[in-house]
Image 1 (cartoon, rainbow, N blue to C red):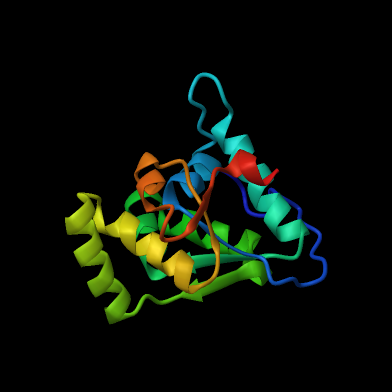
Image 2 (image 1 turned 135 degrees about the vertical axis):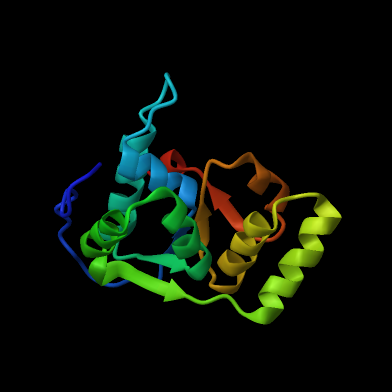
Length: 151
C-alpha cells in the first residue's frame, strides 16, 4: 500500500483538462500491481502525475467512491484524497445518467457501472482512463485512454 504524499506533486497552473480514473487504475496505483509484463502501478502513477502536473483535474464519481469501498480500507481512501486533494473534483451522477446507463447496458450487454462511467465522462467532458476492455465498446460515448497513452 502506498503512503500519503508518495507523488510529491508540485501543483501548477489550472487548466481545463479533466480525467476520470477508472477504479481498476486506482487499484493498480494503490496496490502497485503488475501484469507480468508491465508495471501497471507505475504506469498509473505516471499518468496521474501527468494529469496533475499539466494542471488537470481528476474527477472521482460517486460510483468510484462506492467501488473504492470494496477495494480499499477507509485509510487508503483518505490517503488517495490527501495525495490529490487540490486536484480532485467529486462528480455526482444524476438519475437521468443512471437511467441511460441501464438502457445502454442492456442493449450492449455490458456492466451498468461501466456504461455509467462512460456517460459521466461524456457529460463531464473528461477523458476516461481505464484498462477495462468493456470500454472499447463504449468509445462512441466517451473518449477512452489507457494510462500509458497519456504519458
